[in-house]
Image 1 (cartoon, each protein chain N blue to C red):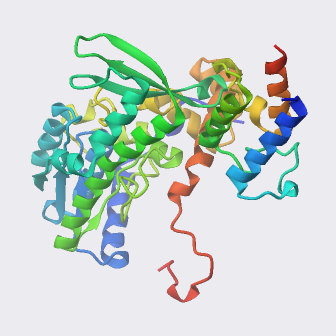
Image 2: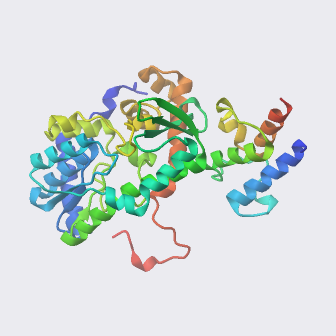
Image 3: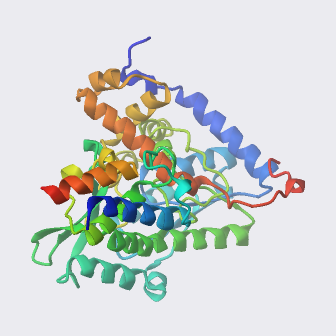
Length: 85
Length: 329
């Protein structure tokens, strides 16, 4: 899958799983998921499990920092980096 | 700015004990309209201090204590609780809640989840859960630490669904205990005392509708360090005052701080006080002798736990107004 498609797929998951909506406008790609109260620490783990399952990546302990997962843009960039590595 | 030091947690214990006792009398009589207080005592410092304050408020004849052990409780906890009850001269009843927990599926649901992470887990094994990452600025994750019947230590990362099921099953313990507390409260027309200290209350270290449920929480504003000092001031038995805080919830012995808090409780107290009083992380770092980055991570961990557990403090949310109830009174 192309990294742009990953980002779309991630956004769809966040919208459906955390906001119960398919409205793309409910969330901007740069929005902080933590500051906006969309994802808490349990939600973060859910998000990471989802990425590991669907993007075929393994997130290492040292990569589990909020900066890598705090927005759709950040997650998209992180996944792209992992897949390129 | 005045310099941060450990003395910021010092208070006048005589005055504070009297103030709490006075308030407990008022609350029980005029707000709750009850005749006395039920307190479940674990032998730990918080419930010991709470029950002693209840006695100071209403006298020993109006306080009813419960000791509620189950399979994973340490015998020493119940022994300390009994010593305390005798010391205070209060009525006490011990109920082994293990059969109720077994019947409701607490142990079987828990063990099934543990076995998903560690297939060899079974009879004679002991385990605990460790939370890690937060202190290093990472997202908190979970690890299973187990010991085989032969004494061999085994560790496994714990997936989210396994972790959630272990916690959900284990929460039966606090919720079944609360059922018994309210049984006796209803029977005696008493109110139920909740016993969290400030660290636990602030950081959501309780089970919603389990130990979090109560009619009054007399030490929720006191830092853990202050609870220990209050217990000394109240002259509680040495074995109670010297008790080391454990969760007493998992079969492998576990310190509360290793389970949930980023630092040992004294340091956590100071960190929480400092965050509450807008002390810069650098100043906290100086007193705790840790790096500024670590102090900043501790602040962030406190904030993150507040966010995650905020809903546990909330009453059920209504979606329309019912103003006529005027629940402030």
